[in-house]
Each structure stands twice: as structure tokens, then as C-alpha cells.
Amino acid sequence: MFRKFYNWLSNDLAIDLGTANTLVFIKGKGIVIREPSIVAIDTKTNRIQAVGSEAKQMLGKTPANIVAIRPMKDGVIADFEITEKMLEYFIKRTKTNNTFLKPRIVIGIPSEITQVERRAVKDAALRARASEVFLVEQAMAAAIGAELPITEPGGNMIIDIGGGTTDVAIISLSGIVISQSIRVASNEMDEAIIQYLKKKYNILIGERSAEQIKIQIGSAFPLEETMEMEIKGRDLTRGIPKTISVTDSEIREALEEVVTKIIDVAKFTLEKTPPELAADIVDRGVILTGGGSLLKNLDIRIREETGLPVFIAEDPLSSVVTGAGLILENIDLLQRVGQSN
Image 1: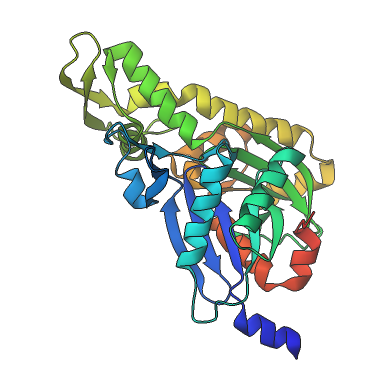
Image 2: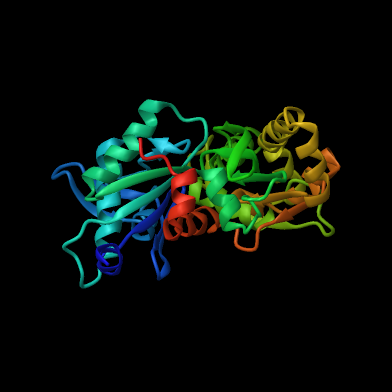
């Protein structure tokens, strides 16, 4: 009776604390926050000026005393104090009328982060008013969010390409059999575009522009029709604004090294997979999740390289937080896959 009463009062949360975006899921309500993981700070007063989308609009446009910070880097905390403030801000935004109980929180983490990095994530959440924190590997959460039959005795392969990390895992019987994580993902794609244009055209663009280029004409495999985009930046020789046009083939060339690294880690994971589970994957295929999975024709490229069926999850951007939310709502599953230590 007390447990039911507690569950009714509490606002338990699942959080995808991502390098690029933070998503928050409230038990019984679904996803309520989807914001960039960016905080704008006034360095004179040390006060937060903006968080999330509002802070993202400030990137590259702030006066000297205001800095827009990404407190997460490569899937882990780079700035503990700012991450804590960001989490506290998002948690406060989820409050309902029943506010006297601190929430339990499930947070997705990359599979190969260190114990120190795990501790930092937990401490940041606890200091941001969580009562208890459970950590779950992002690949597991993404697989659950993508509705894979992870409790069955069969192989399920997932590739979760986030902002800072790519997590690849083979899952069976609610456990991760093989997993690999590399700190190469969507952010590295943006940086690759910035460096390519700098080298080839001597033009400098910001990360927001690079992200738009990736979304609009970026691809991992040739497109059916050629795409072209006009880009504005700063001429590095003359120091004045400059406009150029680039094609999808050029951006594909810029992204090639990053895409190859992601495919290589997928191949390495397959090579380590037990034969019986590998046979299941041949039948079931590979599921792609995360924002990076939306790169045009990435599924085709992986299929060509591995010979396996490849599918993109129905809602790849939300798979991790949705899965973490489902874990939060299922106490048996939470005990199986959640790590409270």
C-alpha cells in the first residue's frame, strides 16, 4: 500500500544525458523535455543566462562575458558544476504539484566509461536533488526503446550513434553479451565538415552551420539525386564574409573517415559475437538508433559493408530515453539492467 502511495506521489524520471541533447521522461507521462545540452553562463556573475534551446541560439554570438558551454563531451561529464546546474534546471522544470518527494532517476550512459565517470554522473544527479540514481547502458536502453525482444534467448544487435559516442551491442536474455563504445559520433561529423571546408575552400563556419549541412546534404552512401547547398562563412584569407556552394558528394567525402570508424566498430563487434547469436542477427538484422542514424543512406552503407539487414528505429532520437523510461516503469527490468552502484 505504501509503495503504491509513494509511486503515485513521486515524479520518477528517466534521463538521456547526451552530449548533444538531453531528454527527460516522466513516469506515466512520457517525454516532457527535449533540449540541447548547452548552458550559457555570465562569467562576471557566474549566473546561468540560458539553458537548452535558448542557449544554443547563443552559440558563436555571445559578448565576451557570456559563454555558451557544452558540459558533456564524448558522452561523459566534462564540466561537473555546469552539468549539475543543467540537470537541476531540467529536474525543476518537470515538477508537478507533488514536490516534497525527490525523484528516482534512471540515466543512460555509454558502455565503456570509467568508474570515475560513472560516479560523476551519479553524483551530479544526486546533487541535483535525485533520491536514488540507476545507471543503464545506452545500448541496452536504446534496444528496449526500439522494442527489441531483449528478454528472449536470441541475438539482438543495436548501433546507437549519439552526439559524442557510438555504442554497439549484442543483447540476449536481458544482458549485453558483447559491447563496444567509441567516442566518435555526430559531433565528430560536424567537426569533420568544418575542417574539410576550412582546408578545401579556406572558409570557416560554426558548429551550428556544420550541423545544418550534415542534416540537409550529408550522406554515407551516394544519393539518387545530386544535392547542393549554399554556405556562408568567413574567408580565412581576407577576413570577410564569404558564400560558397557545396555538393552532397563533397560532404560525403568530408564524413568518410567518421563513417568508416563507426562501421569498423560494428564489424569488430560482429567478429566477437558467438556463432549462435550471429545466426540470429542474420535473421533479425541490425537496428540503428540515435541522431547519427539519420545520416542519409547510412543504413544502406552498413548493409553493403556487413551483408546484414539494417533498419532504423521508428523514433531513433528518443530510443534511449524511451527505453530508460520503460525500465523505470518495470521494477523487474530495473533490477536486471539498472546499476545503482
